[in-house]
Image 1 (cartoon, rainbow, N blue to C red):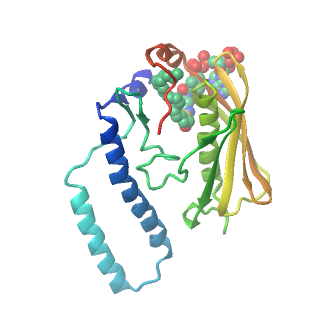
Image 2: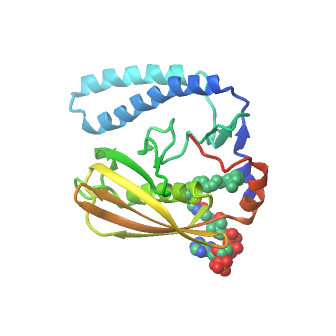
Length: 224
Ligand SMILES: CCCCC/C=C\C/C=C\C/C=C\C/C=C\CCCC(=O)SCCNC(=O)CCNC(=O)[C@H](O)C(C)(C)COP(=O)(O)OP(=O)(O)OC[C@H]1O[C@@H](n2cnc3c(N)ncnc32)[C@H](O)[C@@H]1OP(=O)(O)O
C-alpha cells in the first residue's frame, strides 16, 4: 500500500513555465466541462437539439482522445518543488467534479474556502448531499493538518449534520486542535450565511512510511 501511493509521487521534470502553460490550457477546459455537467442536468432543449449537441460533444471527445493518459493523475512535482494533485476529487484543477477552487490559510492556522455548490451536488431537495459535505470536510480538515505540519491519511472523520445545508454559497473551515503521536486531531465546519450546518472532527494519521518520507522532501508538499 505504501508503494502504491509513493509510486504516484512523480517528478515529471516540467519547468515552471510548462506548468503555468498547462494550467492555462487545461484549467479552462475543466471549467467548460463543469458547466456541461450542470447543463446536462438543466437543459430543456428538445431531442433534436440534444442530438445535435451530442454530435459536437462526440467531435470534441474525438479530438481530446487523440493524446491522453490512462489511470490516476497522482501527485506530480518538479525540480523547483511545485506539487500538483490536479486529479483530486475535491480540489483538483483538472477535475470537473471537484467543487473546491482554492484554499486560504490564516496566520492562526485556520484553513478555509468559500464555495458555491450548484444543483449537481444535490441530496435532499435543494440541499447539499451529505456525502458531498463529507468530501469537503475531509479535504479542508486534511489540508489544515498538512498545513500545520502534520500531514496524514484520514483515519476517522466524525460528522454531525446539525441543520440542512442549502445549495449555494458556503464557507468550509478547519483548524488543527491537537497532536498525539502520529495523530493530528482537526476540527472544522461548513456554514451558510446563517451559521453552522455541519460540524466535523477528523483524526489524520501519518503512517510510519510517511513519517520516514518526510526527510526526502525539503518541505511538506503544498499541492497547487
Ligand atoms: C510529510 C509528507 C512528506 C511525504 C510525502 C510522501 C507521501 C505523502 C502521501 C500522502 C500525502 C498526505 C496526505 C494524503 C493525501 C490526501 C488524503 C486525503 C484524505 C483522504 O481521503 S485519505 C483516504 C481515506 N483514508 C484511508 O484510506 C486510510 C486507510 N487507513 C490507513 O492507511 C491506516 O489504517 C492508518 C494510516 C489510518 C493507520 O494505520 P497505522 O498502521 O499507522 O495505525 P496504527 O495501528 O499504528 O495506530 C497508530 C495510532 O492511531 C490509532 N488509529 C489507528 N487507526 C485509526 C483510525 N482509523 N482512526 C483513529 N485512530 C486510529 C491507533 O489506535 C494508534 O493510536 P495510539 O498511538 O494512541 O495507540
